[in-house]
Length: 88
Image 1 (tube, helix red, strand yellow):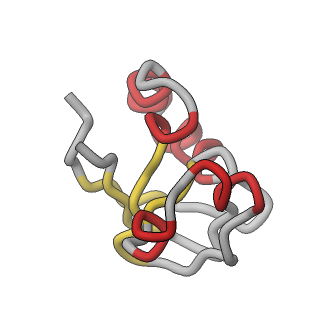
Image 2 (tube, one colour):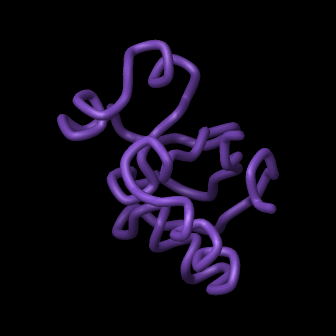
């Protein structure tokens, strides 16, 4: 079970967090993708810089989740290495 686990991902600004997850661990990415889409495919940013939420993220996630660092992995482009949690 990957939910509630912390992961450190090497990432670059030209790839989404989901792309970084796929590159770092294809097996982990496959498990993550089984969680589904939209809010089921959220990650929480524990450490690292990301741009402001996209319009799609603002529509899919409430302000409370965004304020807690929850983002959509397929929409978020990190600005460097990240530590993330797959929410419960």
